[in-house]
Each structure stands twice: as C-alpha cells, then as structure tokens.
Image 1 (cartoon, rainbow, N blue to C red):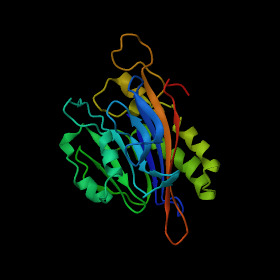
Image 2: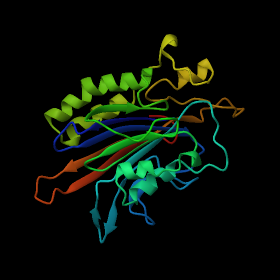
Image 3: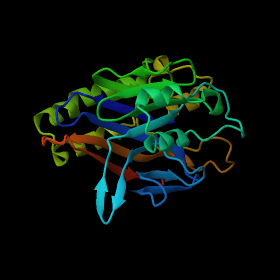
Image 4: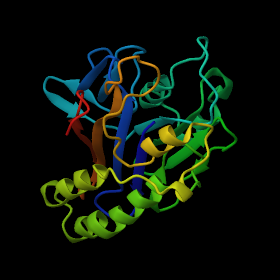
Length: 271
C-alpha cells in the first residue's frame, strides 16, 4: 500500500527530503537497497517484476558514484480495481524515469496510463518534481512545501497522511532546519515512520475494502497482519521497508547534487 512524504524545496542545502514506508506481502521476493549492476540505479528491487518503488539515478565507475539528481517513487492506487495480468509493473515507471533523459514533466506527459494498474507516481530532479496518477490526476508540478501521498488522490486527507504530515512538521522538519546533518534528525524521522496508531472508525477512508482491512491499513506503519486468504492466520503482510531519500546541494560553482537513500528493512514484519 505504502505512504510517501516529500519535503520539497524547504531547505536550501536539501532541496528534497522524502520519507517512505513500503507495505508489501512477505512472500514477494525483494532485493535490499543496492547499486544495480545492469542499470545506473541505486534502489531496492522487486525481484518478481524487476522494478522498484523508490530510487535515485546513480552511476558507479571505479568506486566513484555520480548522480544527476533524478529520483522517483511509485505507490499503488487503492480503489477496489484488481490489476490484470496484462498490465505492466508499476515499478517500471520508476526505473524508466531514472534512466531517461526527459524532464520530469515531459516524462509524466508521455506515460501510457492505461498500461498500468492504478498508481500514484512522483518523479523529479533537483529543480522540478511532478506528480501524476492514472485515476484522473494530470501531471502537476509540486509547489515548495510538504506533500504526503498514500493510495488515494494526492489531495485526499486520510488519517494516515494527516498524522504523518503533522508529526513530520512538529518533530522532524524543525530538526532539519536547525541542523541538516543526517545523524541529527534521521532517527526522529524513522520514529515517526514507525507510528502504528490506527484511525478511529469515523476517520476511515472508503476504498471498497472491508472495515477490518481498512482499519488495519490506516496506520503510517502497518504492523504484521494476516492479509487475504492465506488459510493459516499468520502474518503475511506489513511494512517491509522504511526509507529516507535526500538530495544535497553543494555550494561549489558546479552546483553538484548528491543523492542518498537510507533504509531499514523488516522482511519478517517485525521492528
């Protein structure tokens, strides 16, 4: 299901700070965060379909890493419509943008929207970020600010998106403003991403799922749960990866940008 918060152009030296939880079935094979050998990408990898949910462009040459500032994240769209077997993997959208030369807006405008199951996609570089989905949301540049997106429309105010937004504003963004060194604020960010508070009944979204499932999925961090019809009533779904992605601007004349992702992984669905 997943959730992503993007602090865009709020800090001079950190034009991007993205906070992400990836929620997934445990049996879906996944590779940890790494430099891909076949593409200039630094990301985790979905071994089932070959794409990723969050990544940056990174080239490795003789131990030296080069970045061009490109980054992307994708989330599924929860509207009760099941993906069909002939639809492409949503993770391919991320990899194709990271290896493309198109601007974020041009890339978004050229997506074959009907080729994929429901998605929210955010693509960007150091100067422009664009959000698009294939459920009626046209390519739209992000304005400077904090954007929180989950599995509905980008403007939807779900309990989990508002809770993450509020806690980041109160507990994390002030720390970054005070001192942008990662060791000063990243633990606080991971603490916020680990919030497992569930929504009250009257604040649940209506996405076509049963009440019990909707409430289980209503927290920022999804605790281990037996999801679907696995017949064993043992946890098979939950938050598997927490990530923080940053772009750092350097003050030299080359305006060099460095991209970095820090991740925590819970393949057994336990923190």
